[in-house]
Length: 118
Image (cartoon, rainbow, N blue to C red; front, side, top):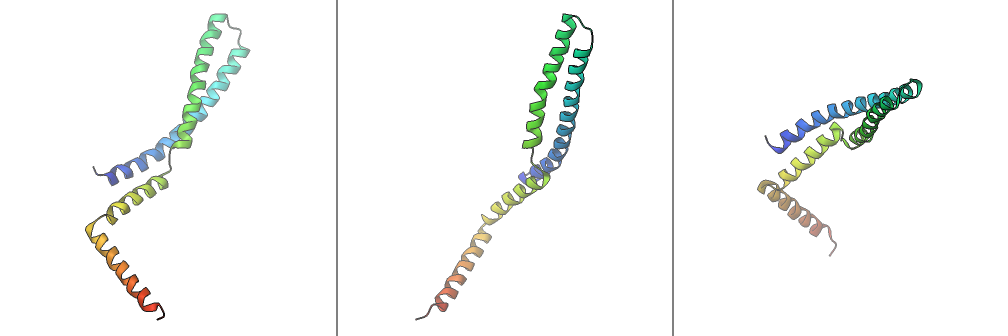
């Protein structure tokens, strides 16, 4: 697989990952609320409250991780733009492109030389 293929693959995969992270964040948020209210409302002994607190701690630790995933994951359009930029840069480094750039520069120089008053 070349770089472009990998970039196009990740563009598609990251779009799915972003949606899953948002769903996971929402579920974890409501699970935290449920465990908190259930712990407060239920008549539990200390050992059961400790178990509920451990579960809540795990849910609470996952919330920032999922939030960062939602914010940091680039959109498909961003990945496509990066891939296009990389491929354009590679195309401009070819011998044909450098010859074309030299020809354009020479043409511009001739045009500017002819346009200057003497």
